[in-house]
Image (cartoon, rainbow, N blue to C red; front, top):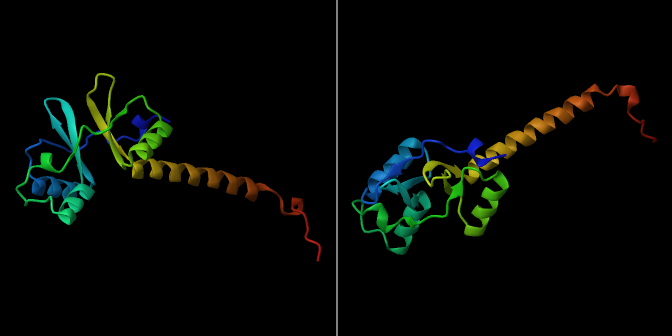
Length: 150
């Protein structure tokens, strides 16, 4: 399956000078864990809720007016729209991230995909497969099952 089937196509983007407070409010209001930092038609960074918490914990947080450019992950590793789910998972694992911007062949942002998106899809697929097995088992006549010897 291609990642494009799982991508959130309208990711939240902010400029590097956007305040951390504004970015955090966007994440809260839209119920997402990250914003993509976008400038002049190019992905220049990603800021996650974890980045903000870690900056608070290690003293890098300078206040609510601080720009996201000071806390974001610069030049994030991106996926390509033609990548499949296995490639996405492998790249997330290799780079120890849970969210990645997705770019088209021209290098333009087309969305974002998260580990949660992939896991939700996998869970749905497993549930569908389990339903099929359950239906097959239910269709077997009871007298076709072997009797237990006591």
